[in-house]
Amino acid sequence: MTEITQRSTESPLLELDVESVERGGRSVLSDVRFALQPGELLFVVGPNGSGKSTLIDVCLDLVPAPRAKVRYSGLLFSSLPYRERPRLASLVGREENDALGFTVDEALALASAQKQDGPGRAVARSLPWLTEELRSRRLAHLSQGERQRVHLLRGFLQDASVLFWDEATAHLDLSHREEALSALRAFTASGRAALVVVHELELALRYATRLLVLHHGKMVALGTPEQCLSQGLLREVFGLNAAVAPSGASLTLSWLP
Image 1 (cartoon, helix red, strand yellow):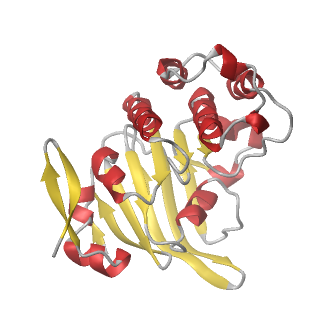
Image 2 (spheres, one colour; image 1 turned 180 degrees about the vertical axis):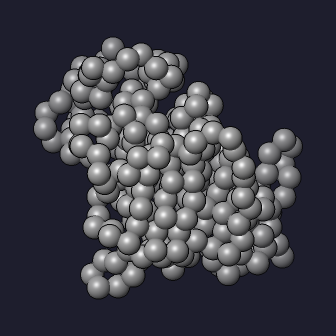
């Protein structure tokens, strides 16, 4: 596995040590170890079935994982009372239950209840998404893209130490996608961290501070996007005949003949 380590004097917001996770009698995730520092925006990429969503499930104690240890700021997550967990971790991007009849304002109020004003709220306020017309509508009546934007706002308002975003940008149009990822960058710059599952490698090249590549449930690369996405890895893991190339001030994928 390619791994480029980063040293920091700050305590990690998240430490994950997975020996093995099984589902249905088979191993779906094994030998995955990393730490998330304040300010990090970690993108997780890999083919379908590589273990990306399971990784998030383990981080949030949503699946039985006796051979995995998850710590937030040094605290073992599975040992914490449920009332304390929202300040450490928030999840957006899954199929949300929007059939309960909540309006947008009601859903966002639940996320920010009894929470001090913090950087997550400042990021949420900076996004031009909450029109008066949208606030009064019920979540079940919104388009998929509108719901995704509301749930991302909910994640910011929760203001947890680590925000998890699964299948990021799946239903967002181009302008909202750029607004969302720029907001996520501002959120992590405030001293938080985020773990984002995407399929678009180009987005990882533009926004990630680090990249984690999963293949067949194993971590095959961890480091900066440019370091991880070698021609060999792109071919072996993703079946792509491509290379990472500079494009102005950022990086992009260049397709090879």
